[in-house]
Image 1 (cartoon, one colour):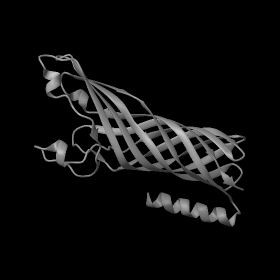
Image 2 (spheres, rainbow, N blue to C red):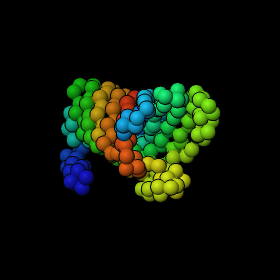
Image 3 (cartoon, rainbow, N blue to C red):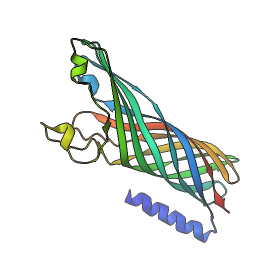
Image 4 (cartoon, helix red, strand yellow):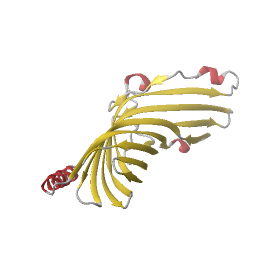
Length: 229
């Protein structure tokens, strides 16, 4: 990461000496995200199915054009991530549905190559968990079993503290604060207006627990209006 920031800093200084074009402006968009969860399939009798959730994002985008074809852009976004999971206990015929909404502050940095009015881009991003909520629902009831563990809607706690084995759900955090991944995108640039389609691949396991892994993934459709030269 340190090497990456050094390269970006050098590129920005070089851009200034080359009278690079600088633009900045708002960016808004929609996202379709899911939480890739692994580990539950190892539990006997439990079947899992993941689905995507729709969210939004809003932020600021800055762009440094080094040449007519090559640019570096960076942004700061408030982004809604999360997903939906169905956990089915086959033997008891009970399904627990969990809808998770996670709110992040994301900082993406991309290298962008333009050909005509179109562009492709790629680069890393880092996200910081701000808040979240899990809404749950239980379907099915066998001898009152579902009602006995029917969960309540809960806030998501970001941090790094693991709960004690006896009280894991109360005195520990739920997910790690920092998320890191790689973003890919393509789009259309018309003067100051840009519209793009992107995909974020989460590389960080954000699960606090030792068992299982959770990673954020998702698509986004964004529009930006950039002021400047």
